[in-house]
Amino acid sequence: MRENFAHTGRLVRFMLRRERIVSTIWIVSIVLFSVALAPGMAGLFDADARQQFAEVYNNPVMVGMLGPIYGADNYTAGAMYGGMMLLWISLTAAIMNVFIVARHTRADEERWRAEVVRSLPVGRLANINAAMILALILNFILAVTLGLGVFAAQVESMDFISCMLYGMVTGAVGLVFAAITAVFCQLSSNTGSAMGLSFLSLGVCYMLRAAGDASMMNTSNDGVNKSNEFLSYISPLGLAQRSKVFVENDFVPLIFLIITAILISLLAFKLNSVRDLGQGFIPARPGRKTALPAMLSPFGFSFRLLSTMILVWVIVMFSLGASYGSVIGDVPGFVSESPEYLMLMGVSEEMAEHASDEVKAEMIVDGFGTFVTSMMTLIAMIPLLMAALKLRSEEKEGRAENILSRSVSKTKYLCCFTTIAFALSAIMQLATLLGLYYVTDAVTSANGVSNPFVLEKVFKASMAYLPALWIIIGFAVLLVGFFPKATGVIWGFYGFICFTTLVGGMGILPNWLEKISPMAHIPIIRVTDLAHLQSDEVSILSLAVMSGIALLLTTIGFIGYSRRDLLTH
Image (cartoon, rainbow, N blue to C red; front, side, top):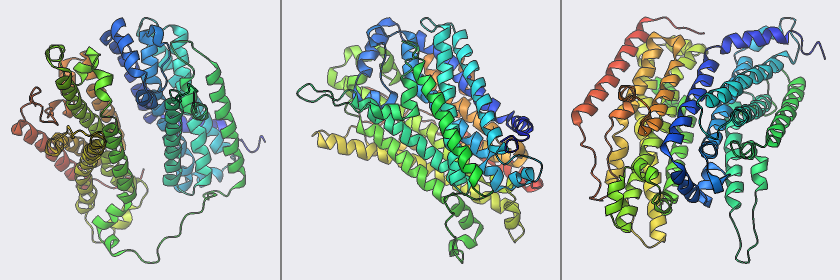
């Protein structure tokens, strides 16, 4: 056994050095986001508003989205923060761990780095052991800094024990998905499949949790509770929420999460000990004998590399838009009694007081549509960045050299991926608005009422965000051209955009800081015919300037890429 784990310590130090920048960005981003929202959320909702929110929250739709509500009788700031934040921070930690473990196990084997390491006097299980120890160290750091950071915000009802449990549960969920990823890295024969299966398992865990939590409120006509809450206990995400942070602080789910991580890790170790290096238990599907005609051109080849990702994200964006459209009839009931939510939907307290219940409901639906459009735009940035940075990953793998060795210029090759990214921006927005509009139309038609959304206006509201999407694509191309080793900075910028967009409405950020985000310069365009709410004046000049900035960033990136050498590291 000692021989199997020989020199694990040296590999851990080596991996920590490789992760010193990327993981620091992940951890700092998660902690800063959590810490910033703690006082902001507490200041935005007073005791009465929190109690109203608890009453609105306590329905199957909201419970399915966010998880069960705890401490509703005395809904403190801590209970509200834990209920709103724990699920999403745990999801983020899980995603971080998927990338970390896949990068240091299956990706290293795929790039033949692991073979070089194994040629040295290193144990057979040393690499996976080092990767899991690395995950343990990083999740421990995340747990401690997250707990101490939230405690430092000094929010009432959020004591030291509660804050540390919040951090530890988040880290434990991360460890579970690190172990799950390690298993899929043994089963799969390539990095893409391993990460795809890991993210699929994360989605399944979320859906199991949602089904189990929503079923808690199902009661038959004879008063019998037909709950399937056991589904939530199967999911690490649902189990994490049973810790009831900032309310009862139950440590038992934390223990079960740690035990789960250990058991799944042991399975990964066992699988790794019996498989050949570079192989997976699920064999790779053999490729075609001859290439498709479309792949004989640089653009066709680039599109083929991104086609699966594009298809998946089109389905995801349509489904997310559809999920919001499916609850459109319940939104006014959730929001109407909460001044804070009304403000978030763009309905002032004065407007709500002087409007009839029918008009008030229409205003809420309109504000909900504009809010969803903005949030979906943030999610749409992820596939755009993946497409824009695909060339850099091809360059690092050494595959770009094969393309450029033929009669293909560097400018043309970069243009292929950039064109796809720009076209994808419109496709993502279109998928979202079609899902939102047509599912809303189906739901409202089934209830005998007309669709409150106007397709033309929903289209205009979604497409108005294109210049903001183009700017982040341009920034990514700029980094590829001039700073290829620092392309990870774009994800930090993306996190900043998300942070300022989500927190900006709380009034806790200075105006100049919010204006750095391109999302802050997009006008609010109403999606219904309601005359009580006016759209912001669409400044063609402002959108043209933003488009010009995106074009300038992209052009500078092209110049830098055409002049620099290829970097395969």
